[in-house]
Amino acid sequence: MKYIETFREGERISEIFLCKHKQSAVTKNGKPYETVILQDKTGTLDAKIWEPDSSGIEDFDALEYILVMGDVTSFQGALQLNVKRVRKAQEGEYDPKDYLPVSSRDVDEMYEELKGYISGITNPYLQKLLAGFFLEDEEFISRFKFHSAAKSVHHGFVGGLLEHTLGVTKLCDAFAKQYPILNRDLLLTAAMFHDIGKLEELSAFPENDYTDEGQLLGHIMIGAEWVSEHMRLIPDFPRKLGNELKHCILAHHGELEYGSPKKPALIEAVALNFADNVDAKMETLKEAFANVPDGNTEWLGYNRLLESNIRKTSK
Image 1 (cartoon, rainbow, N blue to C red):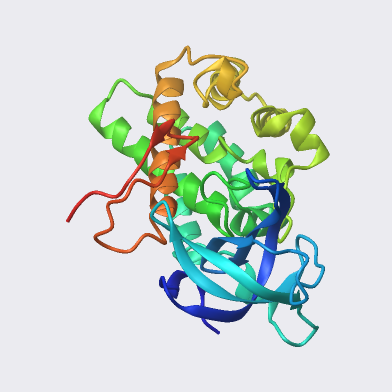
Image 2 (tube, rainbow, N blue to C red):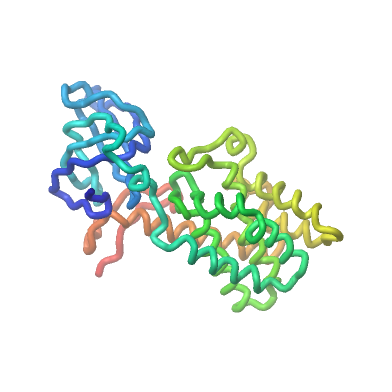
């Protein structure tokens, strides 16, 4: 099997992919075409079916496995597939494990690293709160290791939620070392909890889409409520400390227009917002550049998260 990350412009490809997304559209001249997002475990690839009614194009839907033949081209500096033929793949022709995007890092190693930060928390209430999720709840641990951190913006792969959480926690630890005014225990605990609501906001792979609860409440509210419920199970959990932790979770997107019901009012909430933003944007750029050949400095177009046209740095 030839994976997406190895594709090069000019190649003709005949491989099975998971159809992540499918959308019909019309050109400026009124000619119908289809945009398809193809996926394997190494990433995604934008594909175009310019003649959807031709004899070689069979019908298929999103989240189905399809055998695609086409030519790899380049558009605005990124690779694209010009589809010539497509049909549904049959059972036995593919292994689903080859089509789930996965973290490039070892999941178990990342989780052990995260547990190391938990063991370094000295506040007994925060330590017990973290242990109830990350050390004692086997179902939570299994889901947390497998889940993505987003539908498509950043860390949208198996292990993505863990990788993002670890990245944010490490940045917060660095902030705490640089700025001793920060309450390290509170900040790192908030970092590890800040996105747990995504376990309920997004469905598991291969769908990895917003749930009804996610649409109605969002991961920030879900996560804050979840943590609050566990606080009540710990005898004499300090009310003020609990409110400070929940505030950090609620404010971690930084602005009301970005989905946070509160703007940061604590220095730890400010630090968490910055760490979350840095890790998300660095990963967004990493993913945007993944299929761009080395030395290619063509502009890639507008990126919604970064609110800017982007390109790779010259060598």
